[in-house]
Image (cartoon, rainbow, N blue to C red; front, side, top):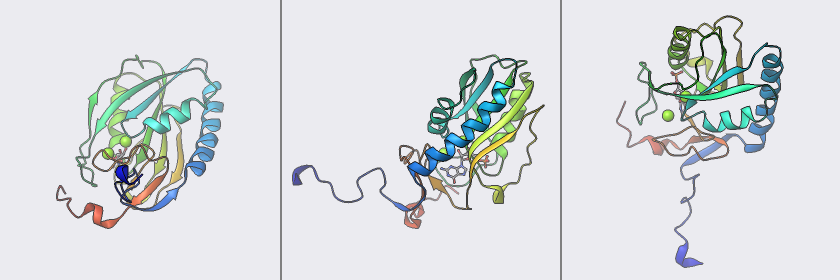
Length: 201
Ligand code: 5GP
Ligand code: MG
Ligand code: MG
């Protein structure tokens, strides 16, 4: 009815220029990554600790762990390096601590996207200090073109990734621009005009 119509562009997808991976493509790829991770985790003698990085990894974490048929604990950390802009500050901080004790445990860091690598480097150092016996990284997206921080996995840790991402700022499937778009079920690129008012970088 006309009374509740607020016009085109009022949905979650307002401002999206193009879709990079659809919901179905994401689901298929997440299942593949989950199978690979599950095989590795089942080979361990004890439950692993899967550490999701809030907020961006929340959908990937939820989709991934329910497809991983292996004993595991789930916890969250919060790491912040972005303001509301599209460029990393380069100095990530961990702003929310773990609940699970990771000392002597096999840890899998679950990220939405590894870009410069600063955040993952910072998290690895943090988990290593807490005594994790191995540290793997499982990222939904990987943007290797922008890597400036070379991170090193710990122990028998492995690197898992969903897709290689082109060098554009992407949103959806957990990832935000100024805290919006996280609820999109797909990954897309914003229209250029969405950044026009962005003077934070
Ligand atoms: P890095 O520290 O590797 O440069 O960036 C890590 C974090 O920055 C990611 O976990 C993600 O939260 C954010 N980030 C990097 N690239 C993008 C992007 O293209 N889109 C969004 N929404 N966030 C990004
Ligand atoms: Mg992240
Ligand atoms: Mg963000």
